[in-house]
Structures are given as C-alpha cells and as structure tokens.
Length: 203
Image 1 (tube, rainbow, N blue to C red):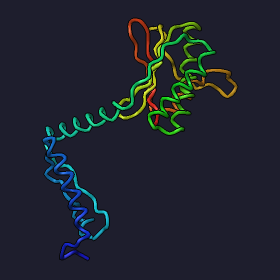
Image 2 (cartoon, rainbow, N blue to C red):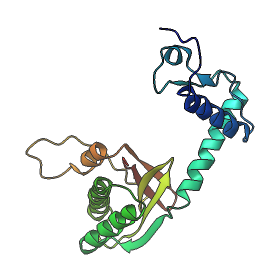
Image 3 (cartoon, helix red, strand yellow):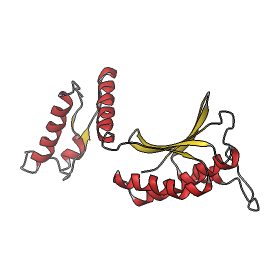
C-alpha cells in the first residue's frame, strides 16, 4: 500500500536524514541523492533505508578524508605499545601478556587478546629460531585503519619468512601457517638494518 500522507512515525526517519545532511554539510560535503529510499519508505517500513551517493569525485574524496580523520581521532585514545627486548624463550610469556593487556585496555574483546598472544609467540619464536636467540627486537602494537596491528622488528634484513604447508608428520614449519589462519593479513617490510614482520588482527 502506498502512503498518501505523512504521519508522526515519519519524523524520526526524516530527522535522521536531515541530521546526516547537516553533518556532511559541516564538512563541505553534499550528496545529491541523500534521502530516504523511495521503495522502503513508501512501503511503510519502520526503519527505511537511507539513499547515499551520486556525488562527484571531489565530494567522495572529502567524505573519505572526514572518515579517516574520525578514525584517527578515535585511535588517538588508543596509544600504541612499543616494547624493546632481547629475543629469548623466557621473555615470550611476559610479552604475550603485555600485548593482551594493552588490547584489553583499548576495550577490545578477549578473543582478540588471545589471538595476539598466539601471534606474539609465533613471531618471537620465528626470530629465535631463524635469526638467533639474543637478537634485539622491537615489538609494536598500534591501530591501523581502525584495527590493531602487531609488528616485530628484528636485525636481519635478508631472511624472509616463508609460508609453508608441512606434512602431518613434520615437527616444525607451522608457525606462519598459523599466523596466516589467525589474522586478517600479514606481511614483511624490509629495511637496510632489519625487517619487520607484521600482522593485522581481527578485532
């Protein structure tokens, strides 16, 4: 049934759309199509859809910049964690708990902290095994694009972690496969004086 008159129930939807329009205008952004979706609105849905888009590229860039700025402001309340250590088996447990505790302080769920614990173990174990026990490392935890990123920098610029697919009988080689399964993505950034293995956690 098509509506023929506006009712009091329409007001929240209209008000919300106008609020969004004014908020965008305050940042110099105008979306010509901003409004209530005609189909869902006409059908009388309690929560109609809002139509967005149909804007020039410069408007889209402005909107992207505003969203990035809001993310940066939010992440400013989540200070990064930077830990310098010597890679030895006995420090793994302490670093695991330090990282998990920092994530909890950011208000992230315990599942994210548990994933971070496993990633810290794998990253440090990889350095101890392939770079050498006693290597100076820097562990960082910070927010990237609204999600937590864990990084471990070691002094070996040449060695590159390789994702392997070991057999069921193999006694090693599963570390990076576990990292790959647990995280949204991971990679290696190389520098003259070392490399950084990083992974983005699923928050």
